[in-house]
Length: 271
Image (cartoon, rainbow, N blue to C red):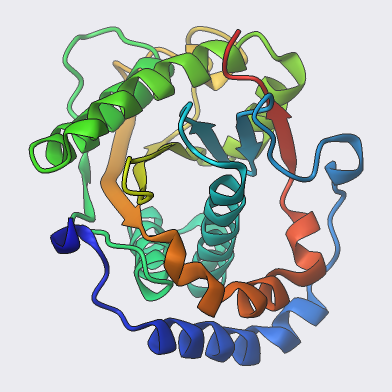
């Protein structure tokens, strides 16, 4: 499994976070505050609420992952999203944003062997956007499972998370609001599980489509994709939680109160 752990040293990850704090502190202070839903939802993960909408990301947790590792994942993803937003502002270059997101994950000590980004080729003429998300995650799982047999569970986590999301109107409406913009849809789907040796395994499927559509309904998960330009990124990611102690306090300082600017809604994946 050593081949699937980051070669970035603990100290280098800590230095990276401290450099980000220094660069972003003034920018964060000047940012307008946004309305937060944090007060109306559970602010910490639980075994019962094992899925969440985190801005325009949909995260689902497997049965074996600990609550502590759920919190680690959320902090790593939140910081990486915030850094990518600073590096590539304005929703203008989704490929550059995806690469900035995965680069930050790497700097934080994640192992990210594949950061491909390309045009999506649908396997049928009429499929819905939620099927696109499942298909992209499946491709990431296929890349991982030859070396990490446990990766196959991530596909099932994606399916159950999407199914549960559709039964949670508040979470679905928030995800819809956060993912849609004037240029189309941008989102990430992130199923997570913990392996027997304690390593966290994640698949990341990013979707970006150009041009609006409501073919199928107001909720983008029901949109038909035959007429849409869709690009996607897919990666599998591993992280050794033993690394986190070295950067925990720095990441929490980076996130600070601005963690509340990311809209969150937790729900149960097991519907």
